[in-house]
Image 1 (tube, rainbow, N blue to C red):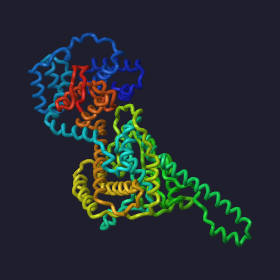
Image 2 (image 1 turned 180 degrees about the vertical axis):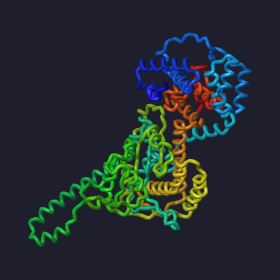
Image 3 (image 1 turned 60 degrees about the vertical axis):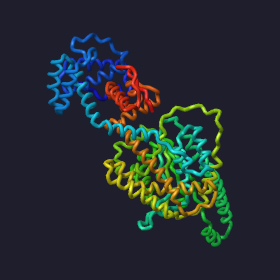
Image 4 (image 1 turned 120 degrees about the horizontal axis):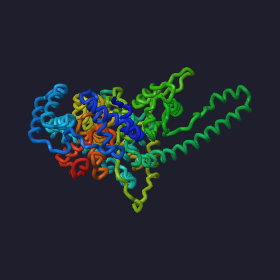
Length: 587
């Protein structure tokens, strides 16, 4: 009787009203005829959902002759009896006949009593861990509200205009900061590395993999255009002119050589060097592995940025004939070890080192779907720094100052591009700060974490911090248009660690959001309800169901119980009663 595919279509609003009504009538008939069937509980849940979401479709219900839970208060004696049953800790099979007997004795509908029993049991269990749950909710809310100030990471010369630009776009500073650092990472000449620990031979390249996570319309694309595409396109256009001129001169020389005697022409041909057959670039939109390798072969000293306006494409590894081997290549670029591409027609690319960075834009639901169970066995996601821009209301800024950062940002990138390949070093303070953070704070977390995904992230943290320090160092010196020293100070390392702590919290926030969809953990669900209420001002249980797919299969009564929990925690205020109960956040 239970048609889960059909119900899923109802959940997503894909079904015509007539088919919804037909399924509802079939459910009612099934429940009446099969009160003890194993599917009856699920059928009742489906029926209740349709009644809540499609009230206009349904005829007025006749008064039921059987006991109706909604029209009378539960007696204190029955409440006490239910608490005793919960304390006796019956298994799910053994409790059913006991509940059936209790429902008959007290004149209650069995399903309604079973529903109360389940809710009361969860409530009592949650009470036992209320402080722990409240602490977890506080942590998720803290991570959701966490922000950074550009002035804590960049020099005043660049921080102030970037801050004004970000505020005009109403984009959080971490989005701007992340975008600028990823852009910086591909302006290093290939061969540039930071010596993290000489005893381990630990060298880190500057490449960064970044994902900007937010719903559409939150200002990610304008930031990406201003800090990456526009300045890079200007630089690439100049390189294209040089490329075209070099190719033109090459072919002109070829024509001149044709007039020479054969022996002289052959000698001259050996000395004539053919320029690359493709222009030099800083970035490419949605590049394939074959294209990336070709660019590395043509310009072995030039780093490359993969720019993905829809980052889901980045993980569509079936776009080329090589299939999922592309994924391994994308991951291996992160290490900067170089490329040797051997194909049937010969060696296409052979370079000893490379720098490849990624900047992708993606919606939260799409990312969580791609991350699946968050286990991250190959460390794919651990390579990325995540920056979440939550859904926030826009405001008018028409009368604010117009800020054009183009010339400033472009001059910084040009300055870095002029630097030779450099081995950067840490001063004594930077080494000590780095070691304390990695070996006293991060390593214990990696060993003790029960999440494979977080273990992978902690395992990559040392390299991430080193890369952030390197790019912060170079960007800040370049913003002054001064020579860039090869020694990184303790101040810069401290800034890199502050930034890394933020990125770690963003990963934890993603894990918490995933729990809303894939786990029974209550803290993440409570935090999500608060976020929904914050965006809307106040919400009913039905509003929560509409706003987040993860709540659509959850009974509205359960959501209202969570409203009351948030009120008890002092996070919100409840007004109204029954279906009209509304939650207003106090955050």
